[in-house]
Image (tube, rainbow, N blue to C red; front, side, top):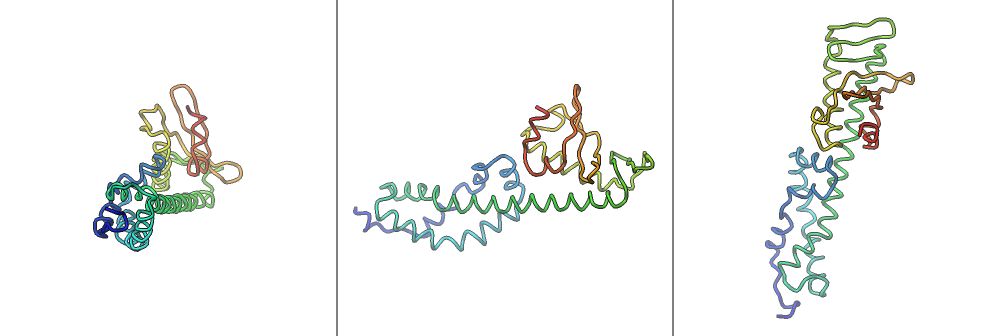
Length: 213
């Protein structure tokens, strides 16, 4: 049958556009895929709000491409082929935009905590303890909430970048330390070495891994 005579069922086309949606994040880097898999609210927003608004245009584009011979002769194969074109581009761009917002929100939250520590004169923060320029205070929970937040945020990011467990990689987090310019770094330790790494470097990239590998 001539391509121009084949009926393209819109409901079948739309069903194909949702095929293996949970795997979409695997097309991207590990940390972005982790973000995709862990954020059900974003998944639902993409699936039930954003993609439905694209389906009519995708259907029209697919129909034109298929009937003009730009896709596989087999209609079903052509639908899956098309899925890897415009829909995949749109979906990956949406995931990337959401991930970048997530990263910026995390940076903003971390900066709020660090600003609070700076304003209060804290120069070192550790588990159940902290130091100011004038004194060391141990076994004190004044900033334990801030410590827990920074610890979880930094360790999670490093584990994503390593694609391995923090402890399994032989790392331990010793403390957080203020620099002279009021930025902060973290002291990571292995059996053999200590590594002072800027918090901002950890949150905004993965080049810092060269120091600990």
